[in-house]
Amino acid sequence: MSKQLKAVLMFLMALAMSFGFLHLFVLGGTIYDFERLHIFLFNLCAGGTAILFYTEKKAVLSKRSLLFLILAIIYAILAFLELYLPAVIISIVLAVIVESIRIKRFSFLPRDFVRPSVPVSEKFNQASLLCLSMGLVISGIVILNDVYFHIFTFEMLTLNTFFLGFSFPVSLITFSVIFSLMKNDVSNTILVLKEIGFWSINLGVIIFFLLIIAELLVPQVFITHFLLFSVLMVFFLFYKLGIKTQQKAFLSSGIAFLLYTALTGIAYITFKFFPDYYIKENMKLLLRMHSFASLYGWNLCGLAIVCRYKDFPIKLHSMIVILFHWLTVIIFAPLGTLYPVFAIVTIFSYIAILGVIFFNKRDKDKSNPVLN
Image (tube, rainbow, N blue to C red; front, side):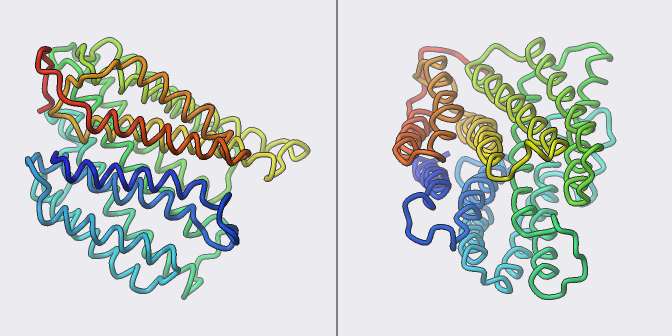
C-alpha cells in the first residue's frame, strides 16, 4: 500500500474518532447526528476501501477501488446532511463496484461457500465483499422505507441501526486474515472446526441482527452466547495453528477486543430484563464501551494488518503498542464520553497509534511469512 493511501486511510480513521466526540464541543451537537460520520468514515470509507485493496492484491489502489473511496466519502456526507435520494443512488453504484470486484476475484454465485476444498480464509474474504454490497443495497432500501414509503414499521428498522451493519464486512475481512495465518496441514477434525467457525459466525451475526430488529430479547441472549463460544473456538484454533508472526500478536489482541465486545453486549442485553436497572441514560456508557472496543479495538486490529499485510515485520515493540491501544480504547475513550479532556487525550493517543502502525518502517533484519 502506498504512503499516500495509508495517509488517506489514517486521516479518515482519525477523523472518524474525532466525530465520535464532536458533540461534546460543538454548540448544537445534539442536533447533528455526528454518529453517522463517526461510523461511516471508519467502516465504509476506510474499511470498505481496505477490503477492496486486500481483495484485488495489487501494489496500488485500482481505479475502481479509488472510485469506491471517493463515492463512499460523498455518500457519508450526503447521509449526514440527510440528502437521502442522491445517497440511495450512490449506494447502488457503490454496491455495483463491490460486486464487480467480487465477481472478478471469485464468481457471480458464491459457490465457494459450500466447497470443502476452498480455504476458509477465501470464504471469509468473499463473504466480506458480499456483505458490503448487500449492506449498501439494503441501507438504500431502508432509507426509502424510513423516509419516503413507510411500508415496514418496526421500531428498530431505522437508518442508524442499519448503518451499524457496515462494521460486519470489516469483521469478516479480519477473520479472513486470521484464518490465512493458520497452518493448513491439519487433521480433518480441525478442517471441520474451521468450517463450523465460518458458518457459525456468519449465520450467527445475521440472525442476531434480525432479532434486534424484531426486538426479541430472549433469543438475543442465546445467539450472543452462541457467538461468544464461536469466537472462543476461533481464538483456540488461532492460538494452536497460528503461524508465529508479528501479525499474530496484533490479531490475538483483536480477538480479545472482540471477546470484550461480546461480554459488554451480553451485559447490555441482560440489563434489559431488569427495568429497574435499565435506564437508557445510564446504559449509554456501557454501550459506548461496547462500540469503542468493536470499532477502534477489534476492527482497527484487522484493518491495520490488512493495510500493511506485505510490510511485516514492522519496526516497533508490539506489546507496548498493544497495551497502549488497550489503554486508549478501554479506559481513555469511555472516559472521554464523560469528560472532554479525556476525549482530547483519546484522539491524540489514537492518532499516535495509527501513526506507529501505518508508518513505522519494515524491519528488514527479520523474516516474516507474507500473506498469500
